[in-house]
Length: 294
Image (cartoon, rainbow, N blue to C red; front, top):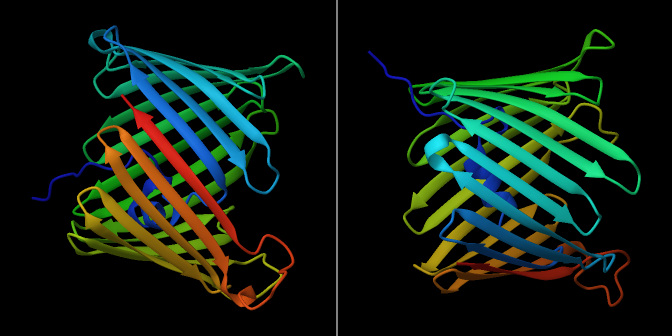
């Protein structure tokens, strides 16, 4: 008899291998610096900063996280340069095994804006389900579920506005995951946008993937296509490349400089404007990301 399998924490993570291959380690939008440290008393700090190459705006945040693993308690506090205060309290495996309670709040004192979301998560082999209640927006109740068996994954999400008494958003995903490859199909935007993706671990050193997007509401007919690959140069470095049917080419290089220190460099080129001396618009981009973790 077939056995249930570990499933991703969200229906959005069906096809995560392809999304990570095509979306991560391409820091061409600007320059980013991130520092992570931890103390013996189970307190972890993270400081991040980002300079946008287009607007030259600099943003950052400071995060402190306290974890009490014996009691399943985690408390996270974040303060951003936009003066947003975020707090999160998590309680896991205390009421029942596999059950997690989560309260996330955000406060913007300058504008008097606030939000509070209560999350309830239950996970078992072959099942991962969540429920969210946005207390100040709607209020809106959102639920999603992921089921898995024999490599097949099925997930979906729906949001219900309590005040209006109607379903405001829904989406679904189906996929198949094997040790060396994975395929997925997502229906987003009330099943008006469809994403099809695949991922293939060609060898221990080479990965490949692709994504096709079809939007039924798009003014321009056709399907958007993006393909990419990742190749390990050695145990401490890898390169990535991707290109879409609009001619946008992205390159990435990541190097582990030493344990806990990683540097990434990204370059984006509009191949249709390579011969233009002064291309109009943000045709080419370059950026970098450095991460320190201790």
